[in-house]
Image 1: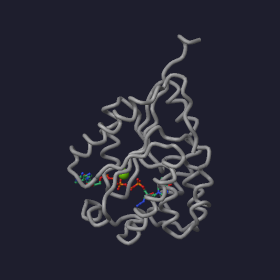
Image 2: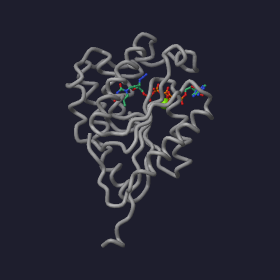
Image 3: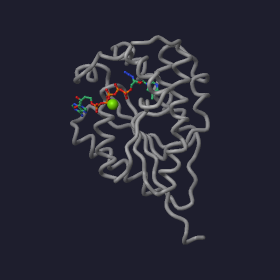
Image 4: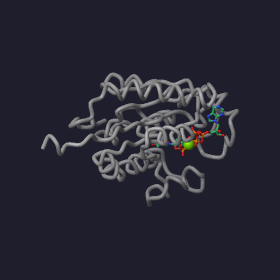
Amino acid sequence: DHQHRRKRGFFIVVEGLDRAGKSTQVERLAQHLNAKPIKFPERTTAIGQMINSYLAQTSELDDQAIHLLFSANRWECVAAIHKTLDAGESIVCDRYAFSGIAYSVSKGLSYDWCRHPDIGLPLPDLTLFLDLDAQTAAARGGYGEERYEKLEFQAKVREAFSRVAQDVKAHGGRWVTIDAGKTLDQVTDDIQRAVQRATSSIDRVGIKLGRL
Ligand code: Z5A
Ligand code: MG
């Protein structure tokens, strides 16, 4: 049985504000690690389509309802995440439960209420937080088309993420802040170094993934 054990993949999450460069860096890191890129919201499912029309502002939902849909959208993907990791493939994930908490808390919902529906989801081996001030983010391309893309709101979200970071670290999670204001290639280098440092200290053989 010792010989039949295989290394599970790493579960790495990339978080940050809008336009911090998450999608660009997720693609680069997944390629570098030969890992599977995934993203939340996963807009292709039935729940994902409801989220998509909410974000595109073609539908209205109350704050609690959309929060629970974002969480349900993660829960419906958990089996696939475990399957990939158990097969030895790593995952690089574009946004996760930490976005869920940060955006809803910024609308005025309570932190504890927001955290609850995600309790029990797989805990990332490493979360990379791409930190960027809201002005620099706003100066980048394509800003302002979706619901949350407003300057004051983004500043609140950044504040909420710092509370999430403290919470994750207090519960034994690995959270690394990356300065996303540098050039694309510098950010890529910083990310690869952080991943190298974190993953070299994790023995994947037989180690179960933690839970949020
Ligand atoms: N949301 C939520 O409320 N609850 C939840 O549970 C979850 C999400 C999971 C959609 O997310 C919304 O859902 C989001 C949070 C909320 N709020 N909003 N709005 P999304 O991930 O689908 O969409 P997004 O945040 O708007 O991501 P984005 O626009 O795709 O940004 P990004 O992925 O961080 O950046 P990018 O696409 O890689 O780069 C953006 C531009 O900046 C592009 O032109 C790049 O070339 C440029 N860029 C990137 N890096 C650099 C550097 N280093 N220098 C210069 N220019 C750069
Ligand atoms: Mg993106």
